[in-house]
Length: 151
Image (tube, rainbow, N blue to C red):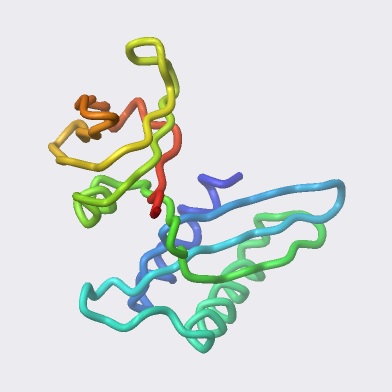
């Protein structure tokens, strides 16, 4: 469901000048929660305001009403990604080189799945994270979850 909602909602959010950084979908019984995390696409733009969230919420609500992808009741929440934001795309990683990150892999590498350290570099296919003085090259396709991990 999450991927279907991303495909449905990314275009209208982008048309408004925002990036849909992440979408969370949680279903419990007959109700669900859809959380959108948005950010301005312009690098030098100010942060997300309450009015931005309200505008995106109204636009997304119209799209959701028309497409009706979720049967039953759902709540829609829109906010900024926050200081511990999710890193989902190569471009996200590129923007935060030099920052502390926490990365979880789908399958272990050198006996571990979790890496918390400084993001050193990003290439076409992988990222390099320094953990306790050792560098690990982590393939983007093997990353299950990643987020900023400020001190």
